[in-house]
Image 1 (spheres, helix red, strand yellow):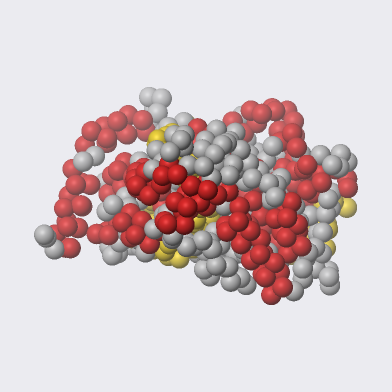
Image 2 (cartoon, rainbow, N blue to C red; image 1 turned 135 degrees about the vertical axis):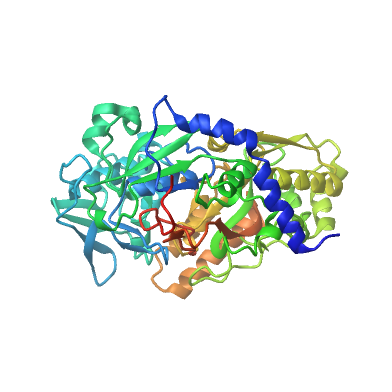
Length: 544
């Protein structure tokens, strides 16, 4: 045994010496095409390579963080609270019944190419996200708008029937189907941001990679080099350019915890903000360092179950898989940042909500249910695959679950590790049996964890559909009384997690970031894990 202080010094020395070979490779990558590049003001490790930078297509947090810097909506995220505050719109009116919002755009909103950014651009952007041909997984964010769901599902063909209109260049009128207490937060989400209609119509599916790309947000996309970096440059025509603190920001797509921390420890990155690339096996000796910043936020780690495949189509099998997991022991063994076992999808602390009781650890009942389903002691049960993206933490979780299901149920599970884009594609196409999954709140309301399991939501990705669940969700979001609404949502969550079980909660996340407070300011932890780049700035010596 050795003391905690000694353990920490060993970790630090390991990080200091390990990257020698990597630094050579990294330096070759960063040199680019044979010319010396400008030095970035800040360099951020962002996790996996983004799948896309199109606001209507993105689904993962690595994508969302970059896109949120390039495109803006009527509101934007406050870096301290994570709430929606004035963005392209500087003020708005809300009707007495809270179903109509009238937004007024700033007089100095322009695209980065100098063309005026108008209310008609907002209407186009929302309708594009809702258009069934766009196939936006996050189209459901707009379902609170009148007729938005019907248009997205193809029941309504006329976009003019959707409740978003621009009577003039500076005004957007939104009609909701029912009051939505978090609608201003929704308007800050990247899927609802303004995208350039002329550019998209001129360049089609390649629009996001065609230069010079017009943007509505604080940063221009200078380039995106796959497996190297994304370089952002200050947008001089952004309405709040005076408070955009960096000229150049480099975003590094790194999904290896070892490489991420090596870049940070050797000064080649200033900020590691993606929890998936924090080495969880070392967090126990690193979490009390002054540059390790932990904070509570609304996020969960869970398992998706593909209910379209036998025998997972049988809810008794799904319940058996859930009931035999001792989440407390599992989390204590793997997670070291203060994560808590999850009995529900909706984390404790979510605004105006008390999660219902869910399935508890009961391996005897799990074995009985599996027997009732026709597989006593796992006999005759087919081999299944557990899908996860390439991160050490996910691999460890997969290994532990594999052992649990074999020991408790006699079920054989194969581990299938893939890169981020393949992982997202496999989920979307239901090309998996069981899949590691995670969800971070888009806003502080239980709806952000529960709406995705409705039948037409693109983020469902389990194949599960239940009219009763859809009915409860719709009833809850028509209910103006907050307490009654919460009660209805709790009934929906009970149906989801106790009866149907297309998902199995494992634990609630704790936010972890690494940065030095004597070098960076403007980074804040908040409940939705949103960290806008615009206010982040260096206070130490400039990068060389």
